[in-house]
Amino acid sequence: MKIKVQVFASLKDYLDPQFYLELQEGATANEVRYRLLTEYPMAESILRKSKLAVNDCFVEGSYTLKDNEHILIIPPSSGG
Amino acid sequence: MKIKVQVFASLKDYLDPQFYLELQEGATANEVRYRLLTEYPMAESILRKSKLAVNDCFVEGSYTLKDNEHILIIPPSSGG
Amino acid sequence: MQLTTEDPIDLIKMLSEAHDPKAGAVVLFSGEVRNHSHKRDVDYLFYECYVPMAEKIIKEIIESSYTKFKLHKALCCHRIGKVGISESAVVVITASSHREEAYAANRYIIDRVKHEAPIWKQEFFSDGTHEWGHNCSCFEHQHNH
Amino acid sequence: MQLTTEDPIDLIKMLSEAHDPKAGAVVLFSGEVRNHSHKRDVDYLFYECYVPMAEKIIKEIIESSYTKFKLHKALCCHRIGKVGISESAVVVITASSHREEAYAANRYIIDRVKHEAPIWKQEFFSDGTHEWGHNCSCFEHQHNH
Image (cartoon, rainbow over all chains, first blue to last red; front, side, top):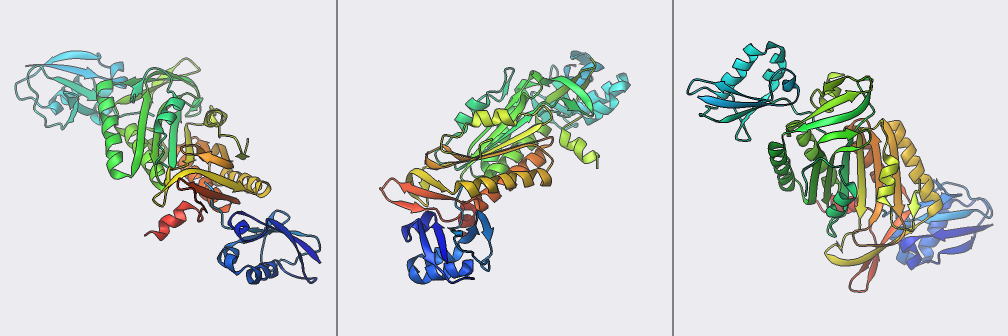
């Protein structure tokens, strides 16, 4: 299945802001994180600290993705 | 000796804003308070809670007044 | 900086005075006149103030806030005379590098000013009566428990 | 009420929205851009924001502040994009009958917004370099001890 990935802030120093991943049916949000960890080792520490969101809601790593869903990789906030 | 007394706020409902008292040499600030307590029993609770000041500085009740000094009877603050 | 004023307090001017390129956190407290007090409708307040001592005491409180907290700026102004509903009776602004200090210093200043400055509130009610304020409201608050 | 904005935050307008004849205490927090960070000179900041989630989260934080504290008003606005020195990056205003509540609710809102809203600071230094902010400054603060 095809999943749209969007990353923010410092992650964009290492990854494209938006891209698509081809994943097996039943893949979880954490599997996206691990796939990116291996492909972009330079971004490892940020990826590990990032939260994950689907449909603009935070999800646990165990969240099971559905085809065409849009996952956000959200680095720690530094607002204010 | 002659002492000028000035009172504020709710005390003015009972006493003149400013007036003079004739006191014995060596009288203390507290003696002014007691004198007013007996003359204006309606103002007793406010007089007891009030602070005393001479020359625009707070003084203890034991402060010894000098001739022509100006004593302020300062009810509890209710600013803000 | 004005410590007491008979004119409406100019929040905007005070805020602009508090800006400091070194300060990351600015906290403003505004004590405003409520339209009710002890379940009675209020028309306006009148603040009596013994200005010479009030200004000396407010100045001393601000100076001691600089020693107790890491502040870039500390300002306080108390309105005197007649003050209408929703107008500011007192404003405190603190600016610091970190927000913890700015909040703590702000509370320190307003708590002391309310308790120590010779300023007295007289409440004028809609029914035509008036009454002197009973100490500061945090005191009443405690008594209600 | 605007929760995020690319324009300078209008403190005056926010303050006027926060006025409430029932509220005796108004507290405003303004997080402002400092001219230095980690001992380096700062030219300006740039805030990236994922607006759909940031606004949803800020709104939720404000709503929960009304349940946790006795508030008449709670407002929060975060600037996004380029923000110059001494400009407000974030403003929180709380209005309550008592100042304890107004201060506590104000801190509650800013602490949560800083930690939870998907907003990221990029510091642009005078030497031409730039760097992403490392979490919120209270975090760094703890680590320094």
